Image (cartoon, rainbow, N blue to C red):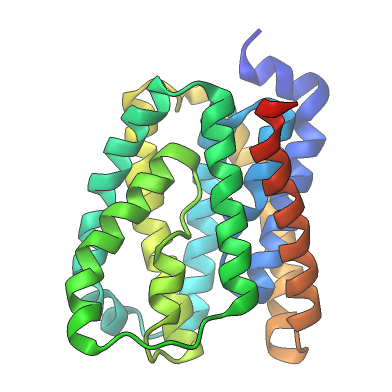
Length: 252
């Protein structure tokens, strides 16, 4: 049975719900759509089946947030080497993904989720010296792409790297989302290359766009009106549990 048939019968509500919740979180925090949606999709349909469904809503949600954040040209120039390096890691990571056992790749995703949650909760205050940050830009880009290619998550290690730089909130959000967008486009090319991105999966991805846009529309105003610290910690706690479940699942 193809993925389209499966989603039309039992999983379409899970996919739409995951897209809505992930977009709602992204509207508030400015990041984390794929990382938030992925564990729900993996539990429902599996990692390889979930990855192509994220392409369209990921890119659209990124573009909406990038429009609101501003500072696009400045940020693109500042981190151009990082953005250019990420696709290299993505293609290597996808090759590894096709070779890995699905339970192992899901466990790797779980580990990435745990690291992401810990980093986000702690929010390290260390600052990288300018010369070291420059030297790390390409390795961070390649490694982020590698993790993206294997797991679908786009936040490690680019998130802690950008957190260690003296960026304003809007520039940080813009920098992260440009990386996500570049990675998503390269990821789509790679998924098509290995046969995971098809016309059917693209159509399903467009169907999920409605749920994503509603979630983003509801979440974005909260970012500017309310302190979202408690909400953020609750979401991170949920992702931490889901990540632990993915890590432990091969052992159960």
